[in-house]
Length: 231
Image 1 (spheres, rainbow, N blue to C red):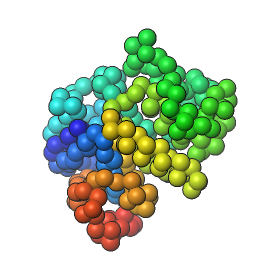
Image 2: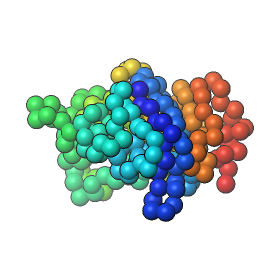
Image 3: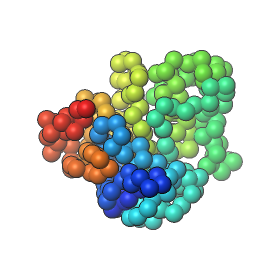
Image 4: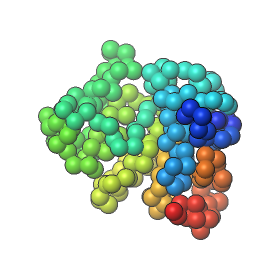
């Protein structure tokens, strides 16, 4: 389980997160919802180690990782799919996938075959440059790259942003498949309420750097959550 306990996070003098707590168990999809600018991406950056936290603790598999460097968190099975995809546009699809080898011992540096079962379009485009793919294909590549190291915690930041509906459905099916394997915790940040609602096992709603509602998916008050998503 991922456990975030009373976390504060700041950028210089600006405090972005205030006393944030949540849990993401293995075998479940935990969705974090909220408007733009409420701290969702900052929370994920704190979890994966890209931004130091100012207070509280982040624990993964019962170990405090709050001060651990990002690549050490990756070696412990934490993978991050950032907002905006951040693939390497001049590398081929195959080369982009192989960048996921970094946390793995040399003997384990292979691309898992189920990646091409989840995203078959990538198998037919291995020699194509990442920058030549459509936005939806780049998002699939970004998720696939994160899966190459066989993570135990998959952190996704708005994977539906700017993606056509048919590929959103493909991404949703892939996330549910990964959850159903029962070996991975999935933390999903989303603004697209219907997508998050369909996938969530548990949820947390953020506003102004705080978690203002949280619980099991069955306890979601759709109207109240939509109020926090409305600009």
